[in-house]
Length: 88
Image (cartoon, rainbow, N blue to C red; front, side, top):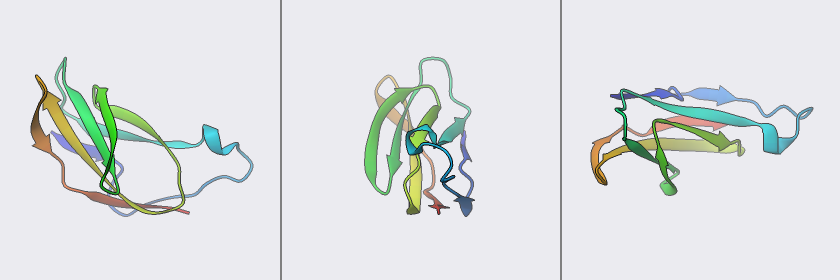
């Protein structure tokens, strides 16, 4: 199990030609099993618990850290290291 995306130090640029509500980065945790869910945290705040290991996060300028907490039967069995990335 590992946090596959974003990678540490990733830099993402917001495209001024596209609507902001259509711009996102996909968080991906690899190695989840059927029935697993993931709590995604950005900058220490929970984005909620979502089925599987993927989440589309709307871009927000600044430096951020993401962490994935994998759950099975409502118990956390894996906490990823925090990964820093930057949105310009």
